[in-house]
Length: 117
Image 1 (cartoon, rainbow, N blue to C red):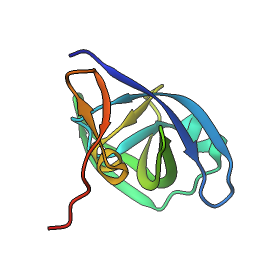
Image 2 (image 1 turned 120 degrees about the horizontal axis):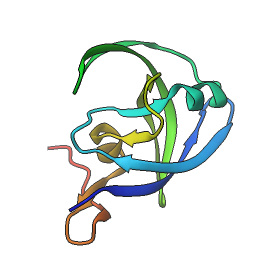
Image 3 (image 1 turned 60 degrees about the vertical axis):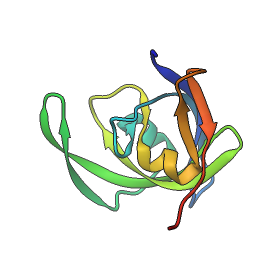
């Protein structure tokens, strides 16, 4: 199917400071991951650490939160901060919170149900 790239707005929910950028949707990634320079530019706060398994092994990453906007959907989501990544990865927690899923027929995103069964 290829890569799914989306326009995303990342907002510090405490200050309103925002950044618009492109993001890669990664359904193999649990959390949304942002580069450290975006974390610093937004003035986000670290709320903890997460030990994360990556393709090259385990790494400890700072955890924060941001208001994430994709299309007409927005919500606060946990984010992990990467010192080695240069692009934003949208993970499945954010996709599910926004009620979005990958549509393999279009190569984009589509709305999905938010469940509480």
